[in-house]
Length: 303
Image (cartoon, rainbow, N blue to C red):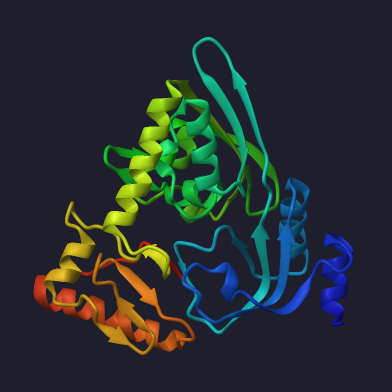
């Protein structure tokens, strides 16, 4: 056992740190990579302590939610990788609204399904979205039919700042926009979020959730290794359509290829070299730039 591992376990618990840990099963794209040190945070305290010990030991820190919207190209991630498994929710119902307090590690599809069953309206269209509430707020995840964002019904949140201090902020603090929130710039972490939802007919909310899932399966590759839509839409132009019109559907580099169902999805066939993914991304961006004069920007976080 290394001295650094001993120091981490002193703060985070005996036998809770794994060295050179294979992260691939926890990434929806399944790229091959290992974490120098890996820790599963089961509680709020675990997340806070992980942040504080990373600062104390001057270790890089990566918080991993559902492992979606993420493409890891590096074969090893140095520092501490924390998988957020802090799962908790509390619901209060009054005459006019439903107040939801939910932890950042709560899987958003699980939450959307549960709320839809209750008839609590506001997050049900996000059924089928991989990832956690924390990650969804970080990206301000959206649904397009109708256009709704995860951040729409947010009231407030408790964050952990870069110094490891907690603070409560209101919705405006996030500066939500398309695929954007202030968290992407300030690198703060969501601990819990508070949403205000509507009481509705459970049949209606279940229909919304079912529609979202069916539409995802109809229009997007399903049951494959992918990190979701890879590039941002630009000036109301669909990145997927630009990639398609550039003749890139089914383009393959090694074990990675552009989906023939939706060109903004990159699929990993398994056991691929992350360098091939890098080559495919460069090829896609070059072809779109050459044909349309548009520089694609990643929506997925590339590490």
